[in-house]
Length: 378
Length: 80
Ligand SMILES: Cc1cc2nc3c(=O)[nH]c(=O)nc-3n(C[C@H](O)[C@H](O)[C@H](O)COP(=O)(O)OP(=O)(O)OC[C@H]3O[C@@H](n4cnc5c(N)ncnc54)[C@H](O)[C@@H]3O)c2cc1C
Image 1 (cartoon, chains in turn cyan, green):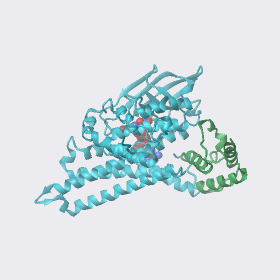
Image 2 (image 1 turned 180 degrees about the vertical axis):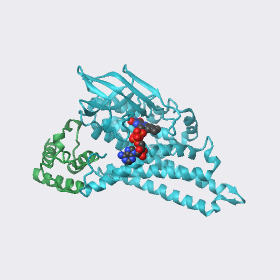
Image 3 (image 1 turned 180 degrees about the horizontal axis):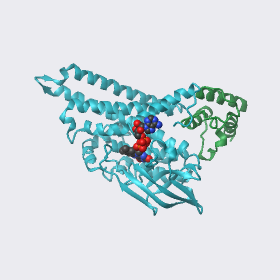
Image 4 (image 1 turned 60 degrees about the vertical axis):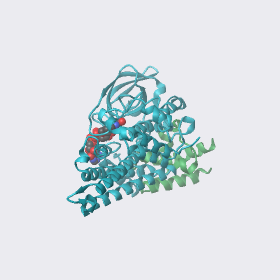
């Protein structure tokens, strides 16, 4: 039997579904079997330990996997991202029972997880969340609304943030509990196949064993761990998008002739390609650096990952824009991959810490190391 | 493991991270010297430096809020 690396598995998987992704985007959903197909290859929990159903892949291999999937479909990469975020949070802060129950199922894709933290009034500033998790009997009762939950339409379980006695806390909520309502979100700018939903939790009973970490550690530890993992996989997905756009743009300018010359003859077009190539390579190197810091357990991995995600999302947005530009109408066509990535990449500059907030985070980290207090900031 | 040696290493990390010296019994969270990334950076530092894993049961603010308390926590963890 041939044993493939995680990266090779990712490359094969991405190649096999490459032509289908445009249709998924148009229909606004991944095929129902996609989670299990990814899971059967171990690709939904690649970085989890084998004991929990994973492949024990390092950060670099996980990154390359996300670049391959991201270069084909952001929603597909998004599935790896959210499963990975919730798994990372549970691996790190879950109880042994929570890990046993959820990690193998998430890794195999027999269960899908959603990460529900954003609220109407709490986007960038999660500290102002209003969802309440009140003590009720031996367990809890959850009431609140969450918005923009990736794969919220189909998730089997949600990692939800809220307040227990005024302290930020996280709980697992199975989607089939009475009082869980989902409202599908369709037609948003990008990640259209990611089956988003807004959620309403109406006095949902949650047993005590669903609490993830003690009250007070929800945002600073559980959500922080999930977002850190998410930023890493989003960043690598953006590298994949930028690389795919660069390939298409280059292929196009070589073949397309206008006014009797190839587009490749124009210096302005070459300049655009040159900038795109440098942005793309820079993004990849920052993501590689983040992978090295993570593999080494370096405390600076957190801010290194913010920097990588920021640069990669920006590169993806820039390069996708340039690709659409040189493709002209072909870039605007319904089946255009750069056109789709142009929409998706903009979303990547907003989620998991918007571009502006990433800049602030990197700057705050810098200032903090110079003794300048940035307390109260994220 | 010597608690004073551990405290010295933690103090060096905290000083480097916060760009200022903090007394061994001063609560850097209370003093507002940290940002939201610091809690997990601190965990990464002790895990890497002393080769153990911070578990969910260790999540008690008292384990992390000062250099002295964190050093005592590290020594206790490494002893078990
Ligand atoms: C496709 C998609 C999928 C998503 N999936 C999920 C999910 O699975 N789970 C989930 O919980 N959420 C999800 N979200 C929500 C997403 O995390 C939020 O949109 C994001 O956190 C930003 O919050 P917001 O939209 O409320 O924007 P706001 O917080 O209102 O910010 C809007 C803009 O204001 C600026 N800004 C805000 N704060 C600052 C600041 N302090 N300094 C400087 N500038 C600032 C930035 O430019 C920012 O882009 C998703 C969103 C989308 C679009």
